[in-house]
Amino acid sequence: MKYFITGATGYIGQQLTEQLVAGGHEVHALYRSEKKTGGLPKEGVHLFKGDLLDPDSLKKAVKGTDAVFHVAAFAKPWAKDDQTFYRLNVDGALNVFHAALEAGVSKIVFTSTAGVISPSKDGVPSDETTPRWVEHFTHYERSKAKAEKEVQKLVSKEGLEIITVNPTRVYGPGLLSDSNGVTRMVKMYLEGKFRLIPGDGSSIGNYVYIDDVVEGHLKAMEKGRPGERYILGGDNASFNEFFQLLAQVTGKEQRLFKIPIPVINFAARLMEIRADLTNKDPLLTPPWVRKYLYNWQLSTEKAERELGYQPTPLPEGLRKTVEWLVGVGSRE
Image 1 (cartoon, rainbow, N blue to C red):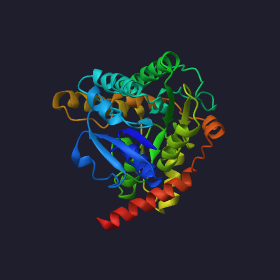
Image 2 (image 1 turned 90 degrees about the vertical axis):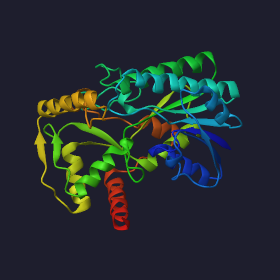
Image 3 (image 1 turned 90 degrees about the horizontal axis):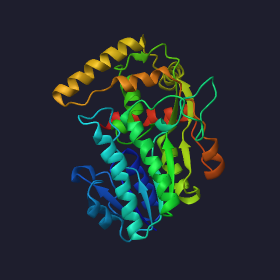
């Protein structure tokens, strides 16, 4: 089969492309910069230069394909213009969907985020149907939530078979980009450069190994139900548990300091002010810090039941990640 992939040069998209090509499929890969295409397979990939906001380039790229993976997104913590999130993540997604519709391609897997799922409460993991009991924290989350609403309209009115997947905190080998922040944190821990834990360390998140995310995309394309969304996650762990496990896996028990959330929020606000003045991306913004006040225990039961999704346990995923990082370091 032939697949059109947006975001093919990104963390998830690149490895998804590799898996498809390895399976004997062809990929039409959308890219914006030639220098980012170096990591893509040389065989089985047809490159199409374009942009989510350029409908003509999308129409050329999707032509002749059988299905679409829309992975590309603007997922940074900050933008000079907040509307950038909505132009790229909502308008851009609609451009992809309409290009597919015009080309007669109905099967689409749309990569959203678990950030649109509700935080958990009272120790009960949230799932795809848990009512959101707090507002979304960031423009990224709000833009993705809005895009998901547009998906529902297109499924019901236009007959597009769009399946949404919601990855949690992705980690593992691959590009050390903004989308791979957890692995970058692990790398810094190995180097003795990561020393801080947000708050008292009890905040819970869900961590998913990159191979599972890629496999989840493939299984969603194969078995997912149009109009449904599937959490692609792994183990739930607090920051304290995560770093205790990391110490066991690496054999390095770094001294870590717990920083009160108000202190982190103040620092994030200073970073945001500097970003506004210099146009340099901040590491954090106050809305992202506020997320640490909540727990994000999530359930993958629906994906396991309907897709045959099987997440990698966190200890195993971290071990593979550390082995990869050590191997990369030895080659540098």
